[in-house]
Image (cartoon, rainbow, N blue to C red; front, side, top):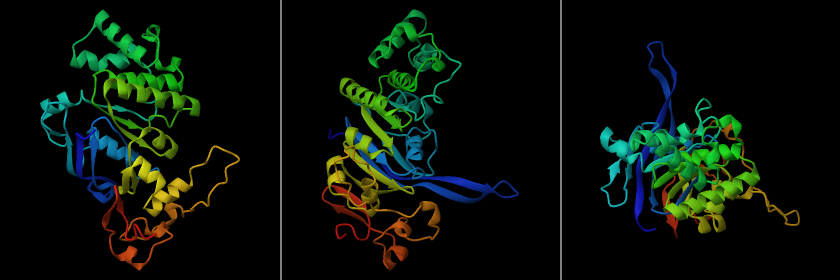
Length: 327
């Protein structure tokens, strides 16, 4: 748990907004802004925040689906030298992608409806291990069994399965190359609550069985509390708070984290709900301030509008706020 498997430093990602007459972007939108963090081998690192906070973009930058504008993403496999995933050594990167896999958010759109399960799960095995014929069928059948599905479904198509079963197929595809790091982007958000619990338990069992490390991207704090070891709270492209799960849920330091936690419903009708911290809708906050959360923050003062907040360390919590430890 002390060995770092992924080290991200000063990561930026920008998107062009609109184009001029000559095809040049009129402006840019910053989706990820100066994000830095470490992921230890064997842990589940959670990234939470509202829709549009940059969580999925961060995951796609790690997978190099998107090319970051700036920063480094260093991956260290077992008994291997670290590799910068933002580099251009295609041969070295092709080897690394066997060790880093992704589970996508929507189990319906992430599976090709025109391919049977054996092709969906086995495509990477055909390329990386040159498997085919009965050897491929046996390997895919074993993977399906590991995620709780019967080998008889090998030649069925995604449309024949429920959402939970499709997500299991997606997990089997992610495990096909025996990865070390799995980026799970909202892996259970599209599933019913009962199926969510089954999928989360499956992911935990597979983590223990195969010594997996997860980056778990979600907006559901109850799910994050159940599965994650370390949690980072993301707001408009920045990590505003990062701490161990126990610390963050018991003693949140950032006003945004407190607002998110106060909105989590308690599944007990006899329990009295605490006073919720209501935030103004983000769309109505158009004022540009040094602290991005200032227009919605109940504790904001003039300094929040004019000076960027410092990053402070309080115990094992890393927090981006002028008044951390005081409010």
